[in-house]
Length: 144
Image (tube, rainbow, N blue to C red; front, side, top):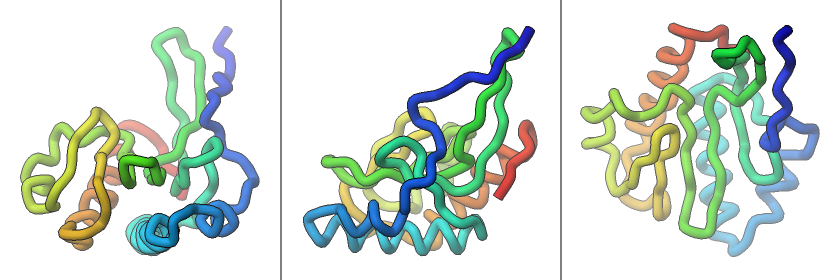
């Protein structure tokens, strides 16, 4: 019988604004404020904390091959020591054209690693977020 999967990175009731205010140095919290505004605009969703350090927008239910199900954010970001990380759940493998216009970044499967927000095209970031949500909707019900 399928069971619900409990992830370490689960949605919680911690305050996103308190978390952002706690970030230091000030340049990191300012970058988080900018990313929060960008994600709110792109998704139309109110942010929620996922785990202790990821700010997520929307959520979806996924099913493992054995039928187990879990909940995860649809999109989001985290402020890491190395810089901001943007999460788009379908991954970035089909977004080469957009990524070539973004500016300096490194890529993981569902992670886009940034050193900072300088030199990045914010319109392209918005398009990446929206495209990621559209692609996720092709295979999952996304709740914003």
